[in-house]
Amino acid sequence: MVKGFGQDELEAKKKRGRGLYEDPFLNLLQFLPFIWVSLLLIFFGLYLWGGSSAVVYGIIGLIILPSLDMFFVNSVGHGHGPK
Image (cartoon, rainbow, N blue to C red; front, side):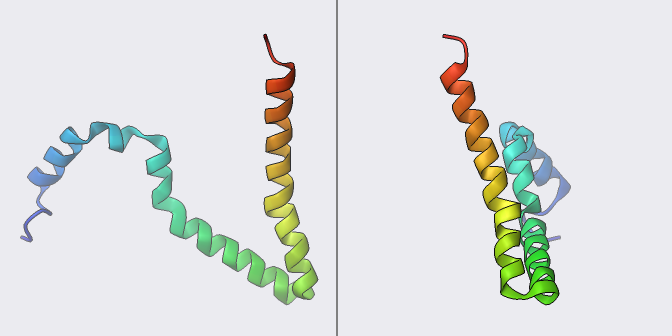
């Protein structure tokens, strides 16, 4: 067995770094390659379907508009929230 890959070493690492295994953001990072591949497939499909203009509108629809919605909710929450 390769040193560092045994079950005992893995359990010891999980015990020492318990917070790392419980952090939801760090657990989400394991899906990052899947997210990038999915976005590339979406943009490639948009390009095949409607050319570069479809990719531009896809970027607007998938990235820019949800970001603007998030910023709007954040602004309203901080501007009109409890004082």
